[in-house]
Image (cartoon, rainbow, N blue to C red; front, top):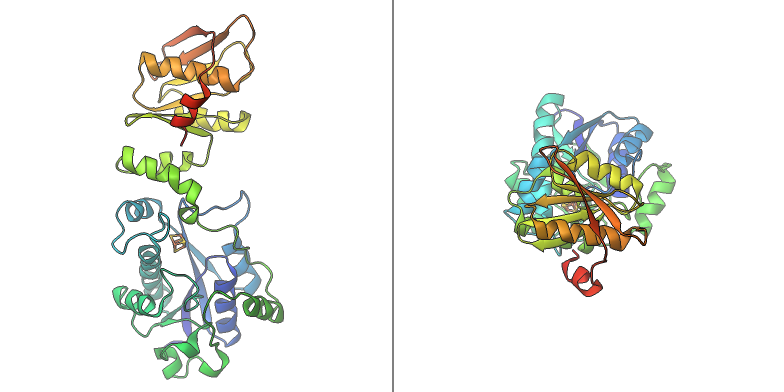
Length: 330
Ligand code: SF4
């Protein structure tokens, strides 16, 4: 057995500690980060990379956008409290790690999971199930909870010193933060970042998309974080920009590909139609632009741009009723 391992790096505290503990035991490590469209990363902020840089280990990033969409649609092991398919997601990560093990000639996997910290994926029986399902029984070392779990192969073979591992379980974070200070770790992200699939508000929009637009598409999922969304009917949704930046993003996604509406003689939001267009949709889009824009008293001119390139300007003289708007809001 080689003193070489793949460590799963989320960018959070626990995975940073797991990597640092094994690195300090002289295990040669390569980090693996599973990237997917539901990770709420701020622009320019990539904690997984910072963590690996701080510890001094290489990082491999595996982008698995489409695979995650299929798991969200139809998870083998179900969803958590929201639309988070955590067990399937972790399994996807374990399988990626197993493939990287072969390439890196590593003998085991290191994970920052803490027994009982998360209700769905970190229960004792779930940890064992994931190891089995991924074809890695005895090969996933969890240094933060090692003393509460059966010894793994690298511990049995003396590749890793079990006495220097930890007996932690549960949601308490103070002891991890204390150890991070002791080990000089700073680059990990706060738990506030995280995964959008555990955010109930995001999941309301995602559920709507899941019901009305099958199969899920990456472009549509990315747009869920932008603008105001209104479900008009099962076939049509309107996305309304909240500011100039969102208008520009909607243009990039929608202009020339989807029916598109924008104010012609006043400042206001732009609207991208997802789904079928019709005269009723056109009227609604005009009144919504009127509602959120600053139309002149003489009347608001709205430009309709169709995917064919055809353009028309029409006039809107009234806003939409608030209760009607609220009923459509997602
Ligand atoms: S919270 Fe999100 S990223 Fe984390 S395991 Fe669950 S689905 Fe995967």
